[in-house]
Structures are given as C-alpha cells and as structure tokens.
Length: 161
Image 1 (cartoon, rainbow, N blue to C red):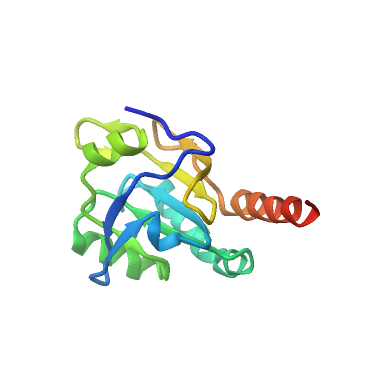
Image 2 (cartoon, rainbow, N blue to C red):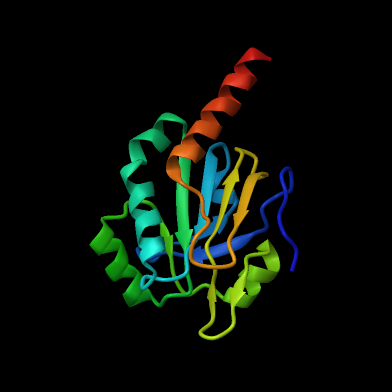
C-alpha cells in the first residue's frame, strides 16, 4: 500500500456512476480543483453526514471551481438509493474494487466485510494531490469548509505571485 502525498499525481481510476457513466479520474477533473471522497458505505452515519455536508456546500464549490466525486463498494441499487435519499447532485460511484483502490491510493481497507475506510483527496487542476486524508475508522475525514478554505487560500497565493 502506497499513500499519496502532496504533489503526487492521483492514479487513474475508472468510476461507474449511478447515472450509468464511467468517468476516469483524475482526467475528468482536468482544469478544475477536485475532491475525491471514498466513503465506507450507505450504512455509515458519518459517511452520510459527510456526503450531505458536501452537497450543502455545492455553491461554495462552484465559487472556487471545484468538482466533487464520491465512491464506495456499495452496489448500484444501494448507491442510487443513497443518492436519491441525500439529494446528491455530484457524481457518486458504486462497485469499487476495494483491494485495487486501496493498492492504488493507500486507502485503508476493512477486511470483513470488505470496504474502504473514509479517505479524501483534494486535487489541483492538473490532477496532483494537494491534501490526502486517510482514516482507519469511522471518523477523521475532509469537511467542505476546510476544502473550500484551502482552495481559496491557494488561489489567493497564486494571484499574489
């Protein structure tokens, strides 16, 4: 398992979303800041709270030109139900190969049942990692206010240079 550090390219991942699209990370985010969230599953109340918070921050993400994509090992029906229940408008992937994703990104893996622990990445417009947040359990994850604040800070620093 290799953790992703600041400045490293996010590895290529194909994400099948609930609207039938296959999106390629990080290519789909090119030219925009990106937030990639791995969540434990629809059954996790902390994950539901995080996804709900990112949905509520949609306008803030639009202001900083950041796109959010979430992913879990849940099946398509379970994921579609979660998307509808939470009113999520950002792409949400399903059926992730937990072992392959963990190997590519360093996300911690739960052995039984198999799922990815909460993991979050902020990517710059070239697909490089700005921040990686790895959790080994239910808590410890990116929050939208911090992500938006960091992107604003990066943009301000760039405009001064």
